[in-house]
Amino acid sequence: MESGEINLIPYLDIVTNLMLFLLASVSANIIFGQINTTLPDQGAPPASQQNDPQQTPDEQPLGLAVAVTRDNIRVFSFSGLEGTLVAPKAIIARTGKPGDRCDQSFECETNKCSGQQVCVLDPTADVTPVFDYRKLNDTLAEIAARRFDGPGAPKFRKLETYQAVLMADPSIPYGSLISVISAMRCKMGAFGKEVPTCFMPTNDPGLKAATNPIDQDTRLYDPDRTDYDPTRDALFSDVVFSTGFR
Amino acid sequence: MSFSQSEMRAMIRKAVGRVPEGEEIRHLNIMPMMDMMTILLVAFISQLAVVSNAAATNSVTLPATFGEQPMPETASTLIITKTAIVVEGEEIVAVRNGDVDPSQKEGGADGRKIPRLTNFLGTLRGLQNQALKDAGKPIPDVPELMIVADRSIPYGLLVSVMFSAKQKEAGYKRFRLIVQKSHPIPNR
Image (cartoon, rainbow over all chains, first blue to last red; front, side, top):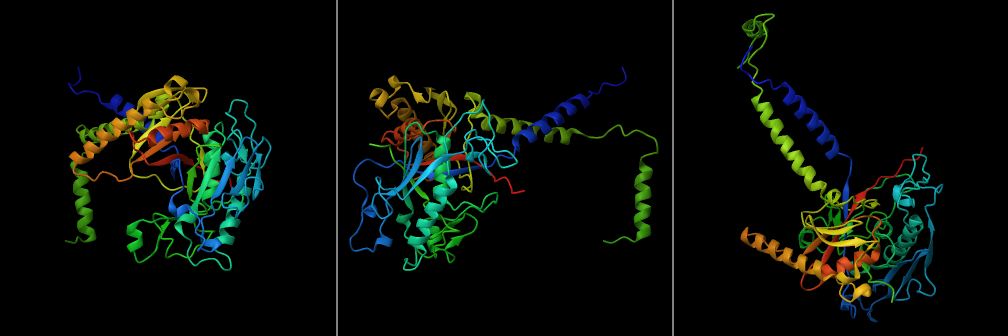
């Protein structure tokens, strides 16, 4: 026998290979995000959500609702200021069929968008309803800009006006809902263009006491001290889940 | 302390001279490297085990979205897969065809509350609050629940889960829906 030393080279080979494999699988370019939401209590709306005859229409909560069915999305308001259930502000059609234009996977029923910006046919994929999210986003951005940034709008947009109700058919898949919520919250970028995450309003006491009402790191702002800009700030960020159609 | 160029050359020559040319280095100490590699390996394996919690119970395909907020601090995690509702790694109720069995719901097929889930979340929150109290940390005023769900899960099941978690016994008031951030395909 040459020496009594243990040969560590095979061990090192195994460990190095395992390390490379684990590193590659951990850094698989997946970035997670989050959406905050609540499920409303049943009963009368809170005082902050009730219309006050003393307030101007632009200061009153719109009671905006986005109703998602299997066939389309209807945008209307409980207050009647932006359409009603019978005469909605907008009706958003379904899209995302194979061959339709897309720039992100969630714009396709099969959740697959090719490099040529076209939805891909995939018989093995879970097919989920997809709607014209860009049109929904444009509709909500127009409402937010007109009501809270246009001529005669109040200087600062009130926090309660950021609320919108999401109603959905119980069979609508979660993936479709997330896409609708995303389109409700922030202004989408132009087709094929990435935009930075929009700023969200908050009542956080730390930010209220801060000199600068906008926190660039957390992407939050104090709505009572910030001029509303619908291209930079949230549209309807406080999405409340309705318990369904009744 | 500074060295002139000639002094540096002499020092390098001296250092090189310590190892005779052609002689094998026999006593390279690789123990620190092995220690480090082993620690890293254990850390990666444990991290992978946590991340693949959902995968272990059945794969979850997260819905993609654009421009969402970054991940928050740790909160209780509930996972809804195509076959089960899992809380902190434990399967609570089975899911079949996008819904919980009516026998598991209060009020049957039309009911929303899943008592088993409510009770489990209530117990879990009690334990977490006790742990925070023992550690001298503040108990959150508004308890939050992180929900990780497969993109094909119906809205009805999501509402049932949120409704069950919001019951007084469980007491979760706010929910964070975890999504996967997607990026647009650039124009050519």
